[in-house]
Image 1 (cartoon, rainbow, N blue to C red):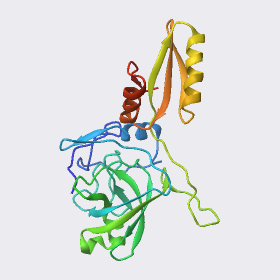
Image 2 (cartoon, rainbow, N blue to C red; image 1 turned 90 degrees about the horizontal axis):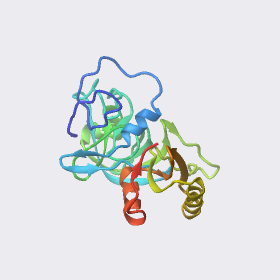
Image 3 (cartoon, one colour; image 1 turned 30 degrees about the vertical axis):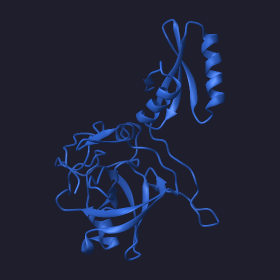
Image 4 (tube, rainbow, N blue to C red; image 1 turned 180 degrees about the vertical axis):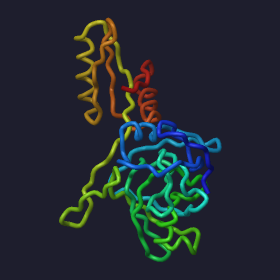
Length: 244
Protein backbone atom coordinates (compact mmCIF):
# COMPACT_ATOMS: atom_id res chain seq x y z
CA UNK A 1 0.00 0.00 0.00
CA UNK A 2 1.25 3.50 -0.82
CA UNK A 3 2.98 5.73 1.71
CA UNK A 4 0.53 8.30 3.06
CA UNK A 5 1.39 11.96 3.33
CA UNK A 6 -1.10 14.70 4.18
CA UNK A 7 -2.36 16.75 1.28
CA UNK A 8 -3.84 20.16 2.03
CA UNK A 9 -4.57 21.38 -1.48
CA UNK A 10 -4.07 20.74 -5.16
CA UNK A 11 -1.11 23.11 -5.31
CA UNK A 12 0.89 20.80 -3.06
CA UNK A 13 1.66 17.67 -5.04
CA UNK A 14 2.74 14.90 -2.72
CA UNK A 15 1.68 11.25 -2.57
CA UNK A 16 -1.00 9.02 -1.15
CA UNK A 17 -4.13 9.68 0.89
CA UNK A 18 -3.96 10.91 4.42
CA UNK A 19 -5.80 13.95 5.73
CA UNK A 20 -9.49 13.58 6.48
CA UNK A 21 -11.52 15.83 4.19
CA UNK A 22 -14.60 17.71 5.37
CA UNK A 23 -16.69 16.82 2.29
CA UNK A 24 -16.43 15.37 -1.20
CA UNK A 25 -15.03 17.54 -3.97
CA UNK A 26 -17.48 18.97 -6.48
CA UNK A 27 -17.16 20.54 -9.90
CA UNK A 28 -14.89 19.81 -12.84
CA UNK A 29 -11.96 17.48 -12.35
CA UNK A 30 -9.44 19.21 -14.60
CA UNK A 31 -8.04 22.73 -14.22
CA UNK A 32 -4.78 24.36 -15.31
CA UNK A 33 -3.66 24.89 -11.70
CA UNK A 34 -4.43 21.30 -10.71
CA UNK A 35 -2.62 19.83 -13.72
CA UNK A 36 0.43 22.06 -13.28
CA UNK A 37 0.73 21.03 -9.63
CA UNK A 38 0.22 17.35 -10.39
CA UNK A 39 2.93 17.23 -13.07
CA UNK A 40 5.73 18.26 -10.71
CA UNK A 41 8.47 15.84 -9.76
CA UNK A 42 8.19 14.26 -6.33
CA UNK A 43 10.23 11.90 -4.15
CA UNK A 44 9.06 8.88 -2.15
CA UNK A 45 11.41 6.75 -0.05
CA UNK A 46 14.43 8.32 -1.69
CA UNK A 47 13.24 7.67 -5.25
CA UNK A 48 12.32 10.52 -7.56
CA UNK A 49 9.34 10.22 -9.90
CA UNK A 50 8.73 12.42 -12.96
CA UNK A 51 5.13 12.58 -14.20
CA UNK A 52 4.95 12.62 -17.99
CA UNK A 53 2.38 12.88 -20.75
CA UNK A 54 1.02 9.85 -22.60
CA UNK A 55 -0.88 9.09 -25.81
CA UNK A 56 -4.16 7.32 -26.41
CA UNK A 57 -3.30 3.68 -27.07
CA UNK A 58 -0.23 3.60 -24.81
CA UNK A 59 -0.11 0.41 -22.75
CA UNK A 60 1.68 -0.93 -19.69
CA UNK A 61 1.75 -4.34 -18.01
CA UNK A 62 2.42 -5.22 -14.42
CA UNK A 63 0.72 -5.95 -11.12
CA UNK A 64 -2.34 -4.18 -9.77
CA UNK A 65 -3.38 -3.84 -6.15
CA UNK A 66 -6.33 -2.00 -4.58
CA UNK A 67 -7.04 0.30 -1.63
CA UNK A 68 -10.28 0.98 0.19
CA UNK A 69 -11.81 1.73 3.62
CA UNK A 70 -8.65 3.02 5.31
CA UNK A 71 -8.38 5.82 2.73
CA UNK A 72 -12.07 6.50 2.09
CA UNK A 73 -12.89 10.21 2.52
CA UNK A 74 -9.27 11.33 2.63
CA UNK A 75 -7.37 13.53 0.21
CA UNK A 76 -5.62 12.03 -2.80
CA UNK A 77 -2.42 13.41 -4.33
CA UNK A 78 -4.49 15.52 -6.72
CA UNK A 79 -6.33 17.24 -3.87
CA UNK A 80 -9.52 15.38 -4.75
CA UNK A 81 -11.25 13.39 -2.03
CA UNK A 82 -10.93 9.61 -2.37
CA UNK A 83 -14.22 7.78 -2.73
CA UNK A 84 -13.67 4.02 -2.75
CA UNK A 85 -17.01 3.50 -4.54
CA UNK A 86 -15.87 5.48 -7.60
CA UNK A 87 -13.81 3.91 -10.39
CA UNK A 88 -10.51 5.70 -9.85
CA UNK A 89 -6.89 4.63 -9.41
CA UNK A 90 -3.40 5.69 -8.43
CA UNK A 91 -0.51 5.70 -10.91
CA UNK A 92 3.04 6.90 -10.28
CA UNK A 93 3.59 8.99 -13.41
CA UNK A 94 0.60 9.18 -15.76
CA UNK A 95 -1.25 12.53 -15.77
CA UNK A 96 -4.15 13.09 -13.42
CA UNK A 97 -7.58 12.50 -15.00
CA UNK A 98 -6.14 10.14 -17.62
CA UNK A 99 -8.76 7.51 -18.49
CA UNK A 100 -7.37 3.98 -18.40
CA UNK A 101 -8.82 0.60 -19.31
CA UNK A 102 -7.52 -1.98 -16.83
CA UNK A 103 -7.72 -5.63 -17.87
CA UNK A 104 -7.10 -8.45 -15.42
CA UNK A 105 -4.95 -10.87 -17.42
CA UNK A 106 -5.63 -13.64 -14.90
CA UNK A 107 -9.42 -13.77 -15.39
CA UNK A 108 -10.19 -11.56 -18.41
CA UNK A 109 -12.26 -9.00 -16.48
CA UNK A 110 -11.81 -5.29 -17.26
CA UNK A 111 -12.91 -1.87 -16.06
CA UNK A 112 -12.25 1.80 -16.84
CA UNK A 113 -10.72 4.07 -14.22
CA UNK A 114 -9.70 7.71 -13.93
CA UNK A 115 -6.27 8.45 -12.48
CA UNK A 116 -6.61 10.78 -9.49
CA UNK A 117 -3.83 9.68 -7.12
CA UNK A 118 -0.14 8.73 -7.00
CA UNK A 119 1.17 5.26 -6.17
CA UNK A 120 1.50 2.37 -5.53
CA UNK A 121 5.06 2.67 -4.25
CA UNK A 122 5.75 -1.04 -4.14
CA UNK A 123 8.20 -2.67 -6.55
CA UNK A 124 6.47 -4.34 -9.48
CA UNK A 125 3.06 -2.76 -8.94
CA UNK A 126 1.95 -0.31 -11.61
CA UNK A 127 -1.53 0.72 -10.48
CA UNK A 128 -3.59 0.87 -7.29
CA UNK A 129 -7.30 0.58 -8.05
CA UNK A 130 -10.12 1.91 -5.92
CA UNK A 131 -12.27 -0.62 -4.08
CA UNK A 132 -15.01 -0.43 -6.72
CA UNK A 133 -12.60 -0.80 -9.66
CA UNK A 134 -10.81 -3.59 -7.83
CA UNK A 135 -14.10 -5.38 -7.28
CA UNK A 136 -14.84 -5.13 -11.02
CA UNK A 137 -11.53 -6.89 -11.67
CA UNK A 138 -11.86 -9.48 -8.92
CA UNK A 139 -9.11 -7.91 -6.82
CA UNK A 140 -11.35 -7.93 -3.74
CA UNK A 141 -10.78 -11.70 -3.72
CA UNK A 142 -7.30 -12.11 -5.13
CA UNK A 143 -5.71 -8.97 -3.68
CA UNK A 144 -3.22 -8.70 -6.57
CA UNK A 145 -3.44 -9.49 -10.27
CA UNK A 146 -1.44 -9.26 -13.48
CA UNK A 147 -2.98 -6.47 -15.53
CA UNK A 148 -2.70 -4.57 -18.77
CA UNK A 149 -3.30 -0.81 -18.79
CA UNK A 150 -4.39 1.08 -21.90
CA UNK A 151 -4.81 4.86 -22.15
CA UNK A 152 -8.23 5.59 -23.67
CA UNK A 153 -8.80 9.27 -22.88
CA UNK A 154 -7.92 12.40 -20.93
CA UNK A 155 -9.50 15.02 -18.66
CA UNK A 156 -11.98 12.43 -17.42
CA UNK A 157 -13.33 11.75 -20.92
CA UNK A 158 -12.94 8.66 -23.12
CA UNK A 159 -11.57 9.38 -26.60
CA UNK A 160 -13.82 8.74 -29.58
CA UNK A 161 -13.38 5.63 -31.70
CA UNK A 162 -12.90 5.54 -35.45
CA UNK A 163 -14.83 3.30 -37.86
CA UNK A 164 -12.08 0.71 -37.48
CA UNK A 165 -13.01 0.54 -33.77
CA UNK A 166 -9.66 2.06 -32.78
CA UNK A 167 -9.34 5.04 -30.47
CA UNK A 168 -8.30 8.30 -32.13
CA UNK A 169 -4.57 8.66 -31.57
CA UNK A 170 -3.41 11.83 -29.89
CA UNK A 171 -1.38 12.85 -26.90
CA UNK A 172 -1.80 15.20 -24.00
CA UNK A 173 0.80 17.53 -22.59
CA UNK A 174 -0.20 18.84 -19.19
CA UNK A 175 2.86 20.83 -18.35
CA UNK A 176 4.87 23.47 -20.18
CA UNK A 177 8.48 23.86 -19.14
CA UNK A 178 10.87 25.82 -21.35
CA UNK A 179 14.55 26.56 -21.85
CA UNK A 180 16.01 30.01 -22.48
CA UNK A 181 18.14 29.63 -25.61
CA UNK A 182 19.31 33.22 -25.94
CA UNK A 183 19.10 36.83 -24.74
CA UNK A 184 19.64 39.90 -26.96
CA UNK A 185 19.67 43.66 -26.68
CA UNK A 186 18.22 43.89 -30.20
CA UNK A 187 14.91 42.42 -31.27
CA UNK A 188 16.35 41.42 -34.65
CA UNK A 189 18.87 39.11 -32.97
CA UNK A 190 16.15 37.45 -30.90
CA UNK A 191 13.98 37.05 -34.01
CA UNK A 192 16.79 35.29 -35.88
CA UNK A 193 17.26 32.76 -33.08
CA UNK A 194 13.50 32.27 -32.78
CA UNK A 195 13.27 31.35 -36.48
CA UNK A 196 16.25 29.01 -36.15
CA UNK A 197 14.78 27.05 -33.22
CA UNK A 198 11.29 26.94 -34.70
CA UNK A 199 12.81 25.41 -37.82
CA UNK A 200 15.01 22.94 -35.90
CA UNK A 201 12.35 21.91 -33.36
CA UNK A 202 8.89 22.17 -34.99
CA UNK A 203 7.24 20.20 -32.15
CA UNK A 204 8.11 22.98 -29.70
CA UNK A 205 7.19 26.67 -29.72
CA UNK A 206 9.95 29.26 -29.50
CA UNK A 207 8.78 32.63 -28.17
CA UNK A 208 10.33 36.02 -27.43
CA UNK A 209 9.86 37.69 -24.04
CA UNK A 210 10.95 41.25 -23.33
CA UNK A 211 12.35 42.07 -19.90
CA UNK A 212 13.58 45.65 -19.66
CA UNK A 213 16.15 46.20 -22.42
CA UNK A 214 16.61 42.49 -23.12
CA UNK A 215 14.76 40.21 -25.50
CA UNK A 216 14.86 36.67 -24.14
CA UNK A 217 14.19 33.67 -26.40
CA UNK A 218 12.42 30.71 -24.78
CA UNK A 219 11.79 27.33 -26.35
CA UNK A 220 8.63 26.00 -24.73
CA UNK A 221 6.70 22.74 -24.75
CA UNK A 222 8.70 20.34 -22.58
CA UNK A 223 6.49 17.91 -20.67
CA UNK A 224 8.55 17.92 -17.47
CA UNK A 225 11.41 19.74 -15.79
CA UNK A 226 13.62 16.68 -16.33
CA UNK A 227 12.91 16.74 -20.08
CA UNK A 228 13.76 20.45 -20.26
CA UNK A 229 16.93 19.94 -18.22
CA UNK A 230 18.11 17.14 -20.49
CA UNK A 231 17.68 19.35 -23.56
CA UNK A 232 19.50 22.23 -21.88
CA UNK A 233 22.42 20.08 -20.79
CA UNK A 234 22.85 18.60 -24.27
CA UNK A 235 22.11 21.61 -26.47
CA UNK A 236 22.23 24.89 -24.52
CA UNK A 237 24.65 24.53 -21.57
CA UNK A 238 24.40 28.24 -20.77
CA UNK A 239 20.60 28.23 -20.86
CA UNK A 240 18.22 27.87 -17.95
CA UNK A 241 14.81 26.36 -17.33
CA UNK A 242 11.77 28.66 -17.34
CA UNK A 243 8.03 28.48 -16.68
CA UNK A 244 5.64 31.01 -18.31
